[in-house]
Picture 1 (spheres, one colour):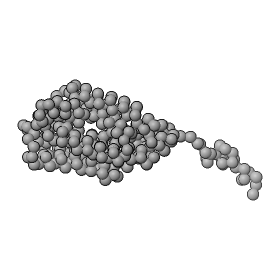
Picture 2 (cartoon, one colour):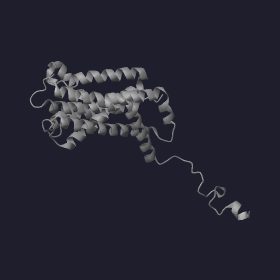
Picture 3 (tube, one colour):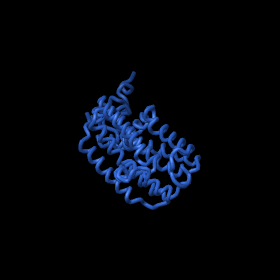
Picture 4 (cartoon, rainbow, N blue to C red):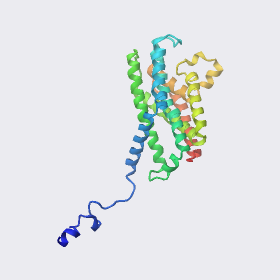
Amino acid sequence: MSADTTTGTGTGPETGTGTFTPRPGAAPLARMIRAQAALETRMLLRNGEQLLLTVVIPTLLLVLFSAVDIIDTGEGEAVDFLAPGVLALAVMSTAFTGQAIATGFERRYGVLKRLGASPLPRWGLMTAKTCSVLVTEILQIALLTVIAFALGWSPQGNPLSVLALLVLGTAAFSGLGLLMAGTLRAEATLAAANLVFLLLLVGGGVIVPMDKFPAGARAVLELLPISALSDGLRDVLQHGAGLPWGEMGILAAWAVLGLGAAARFFRWE
């Protein structure tokens, strides 16, 4: 065999410039964030408990209370009152309850610590988690909207106002969920997140109108993020209002406080 066939022509690994030359280094940041977001979304959608919170419970509540006259929702079709509240519940179930539980156990088992030492920066990991939450919410809202239309829902208002409320609500609940996951033990996060979910489901204006509560309790409950989100969505989608500035202000305040506290106190291990 001739020497030419053993040394190559400048395209083999021996020369350091060929096809098989290693190129160590991290992938582009945007690609890493997309890959992590896709992984987070797949993990969330494969989790039975998460699907129960994000899909099954909101769907059952919407169908049951729309079909059966259990609670007086005022004038008009029950679904017109219930659909905005259930959309708010879907946001809370994903951005707060689901994210808090999943992140809390990732922290307990050392997953966050290992990811924090990877080429993906920590803020990139949080960005990927946020993207995963948004993708899941889009799927939730699409499903619940189709079901609500099948039940006779006739929404009004500006879709941009709805989008603004959903974004602010997601920011508020994400901050609170990350704060809980980053400061409490995983078992405590699991119990607290589920308890808060149940309490806000009952007292957050999702199913039961706020005017059913005593005046003193209502004044406090209306300051909660779930109440602000459900009432704001109801003002737009049921009553055709413009931007509900009061409810948006409450959500913005919760978002600033929650995200700021999470950034300050979140512990990665």
